[in-house]
Image 1 (spheres, rainbow, N blue to C red):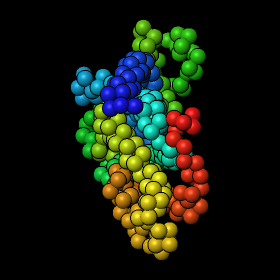
Image 2: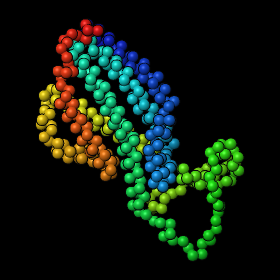
Image 3: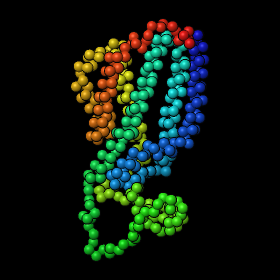
Image 4: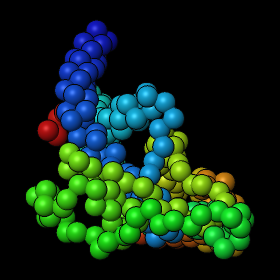
Length: 319
C-alpha cells in the first residue's frame, strides 16, 4: 500500500469510530441515571451503616445535570473503547508478522481482565471500607451527645407527634395510609410523613456528632472516577513487568531479590493513590504487591518464545 492508501485507510477508521461514538453517547444518556444510582450505592450504604442521613447535596442547579453528563461521557468511553481498539487493530494488523500479532492477542485480554478486576475490587472492597471508616471517624471526631445539649429550664417540652410503626411498602403504594401519618423507616433511617396528595416527605435522622456529613454529588462522582482511573493504571503493573522482561530491561531474579523494597514502595503508593485513610492505604498497598507477585509469575512462565511461535508470515498473507 502507498502512503496515500494508508491515509485513506486511517481516515476511514476514524470515521467509523466517530459514527459509532455518537449513537453510543445518545444511548448512554438513557441509562446514565441508573449508572449514577449504582455509583452512589456504596456511599448510601456506608451512611446508613454509620447512622447518618442518606442524602446527597447539590449546591447548584447544574450540579446534578453535570454529574449526569459526566457519567454518560465516561460510560460512552468504556463501552466504545473495544470498538476503538478494534478499528486501531484493523489498521495496524496487516503490517505485522503473525508472531507479532500473537503478542497482542495475549496482552490485550490480559490487560482487560486486570482492569476489570481492579474495578470490581474498587467498588466491592475499597469504596465500602474506605467510606464507612471516614464517615464513622468524622462522626466521632467532635461528638456532642444529646444529653449534653443545653436546654433552658423553662423551655416547654411538648410532644409534636407520636411515631407509629412503619406501614408496608404495598400499603403506601396503594394509598391506604391516611395523610398526616408519621412513622420511622428503619431501612432508610428517616422519619417519613404522608402528604395530603399521598406522596412521602422525609426528615433525615442525624447522628449525635457536631459535624453534619452531607456530601456533594459532583465531588463524589469525581472521586469515584479518579479512583477508577488510578486503579485501571495500577492494575497494569503485571503487563508492564512482562513487557520489561521481554525487552531485557527487567530480570526475574533481580525483581525477586528486591521484594522487600517493592513492598515498601507499594505501601507508599497506597498512601499516595488513595483518599489517605489507613484502611484504603493498606488495601491499595496489598493489591499492588499481589499484582507484583503475579507479574513475577508471568515473567517466569510466559516467555517471548512461547508467545511468538515460529511463524514469520505477514498478517495480511496469513489471513
